Image: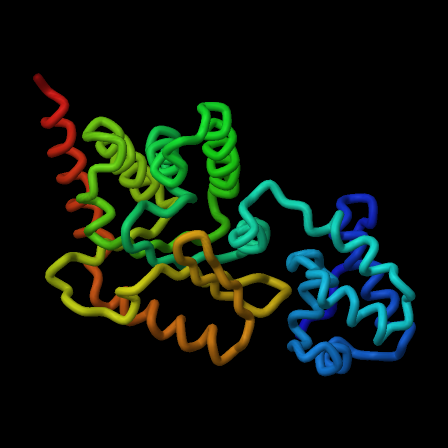
Length: 279
């Protein structure tokens, strides 16, 4: 496993906490694997804490203070490092997403957040919070769209999405919003900025029928899988679990339309929505 990066402690509370953890661990003469065993986590998880890509939860902070003899340093400081502008169940996944070199995602009922348009994102956020004020919705949309900035680089990360046909057919926000959303996906595909495959209805049963998943690979850390449900999510670095869901993803890509046929279907459905807009 690659060694932890040298961090700039002034860059963020999480970077400071990671740098202090690395210092305390090395001072105690422990490897990442040694410390992981005492915390009942993997050595790679410790490495991700040190790199600032994973959030330090209070239960781990208490154990670290005990194992490393740091009094209450980590308990006192983990709160500041854990602050996030994203919902609790999604915060870690959103933050590590920005460090990924490759993101592979299956979406069952909606277009993935990284390739949503503002109008589509607004319709989704409004569906989640039907009684929220416009200011709240504006904030949610802004946070979601901020994540799409990682696609401004022309080459990284690799984004490969498998989208269920249901997400194309579900009229979210109305025909005009859907037409724009699908044209946006088609544009990303034509510019070679994203690989998108549509899993058609006639593909039948598949291993991810009960939810969505996101696999993330990194240059200097082990891969992660994020599993999400309604207001719940779980980020997992267990190698066997990641391999399990990677196989699921490969099965999905095998059952999905090719990128070329997917592009044709996406543009065709977008055109149908455009015709619905006409008087």
